[in-house]
Length: 134
Image (cartoon, rainbow, N blue to C red; front, side, top):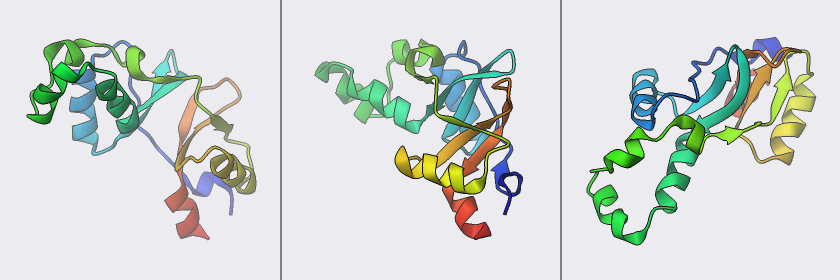
C-alpha cells in the first residue's frame, strides 16, 4: 500500500477567520479537523479538541452560558489563530505508510496532515483509512 492510497482531500481554513465562521464551516463540511493554511502553506491545525481547550480556560462564571448553549459572543469573535495548534506534526507525501503509522503511534494521533516538500497541503491521513486498506 502506498500513502497516496489513503490520503483524503481536506477542506482547510485561514487563521484569520472567527471561531463562529469556523463552526459554520465545520458544520457544513461535517468535519472537526482542519488544516490551517496561509498562502498554501500549512501553519497549523484546528479541531474540536482546540475548541474544548478554549472552553476549559474560561472563568467558572462563564460556564453556565456555555452549558446552556449560549456561547459568549466574545468567544465566537476570536480568531482561529487564537486556538489553533501551530506547527503541527506533518508527514511528507513521499513518506512510506509504515513511517506514517509510526508517527501517528508515537504522537497519539488519529489524523496527520500530509504536505509536499514546500509544506503545501496535500491532504490528511486518518488511521481508520489505513486500517481499512490493510
